[in-house]
Image (cartoon, rainbow, N blue to C red; front, side, top):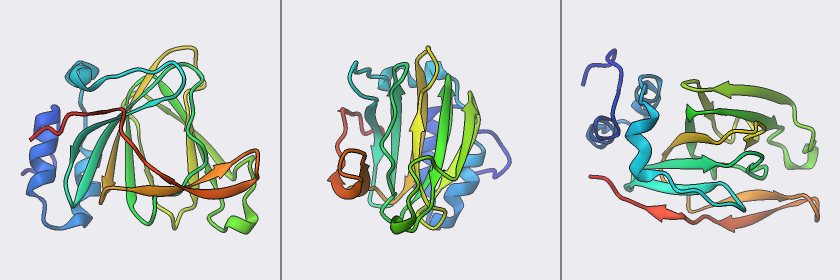
Length: 178
């Protein structure tokens, strides 16, 4: 593994992730991702009513998901259940909105908002707060998510009840590339 070479295929990414013994190196790998949309075609899956969560690979150490977003789709405000998360925008544009991590101080207008365009990256963990992602454009978007340890469930903000609830996470498709 050369820590300066770009990672240009899904297969190369999976191989490098599988070879890592130190979870602190995931960030270095995430910085090197430069994969074109065509390499993700096999993993794309679209839903009209919600963004789709498509598992590329899951091990005891990490989880690699491809999220596919129709125009206007968004996640609720959520945590990462004490795991680290790196996001790589494969195609389109997403808006990341961050929120105070102290639940009693949650401000549904957010404390910071950032636009992420194609090939840009973002990092999030619960110490930085909670966040939501949205495709506010009129085009489709695709994002790659790397989690240091799989996330089985997370706290999600319920706008109607104005509180957080634990939610079990599911995939829309699962490919398990080796």
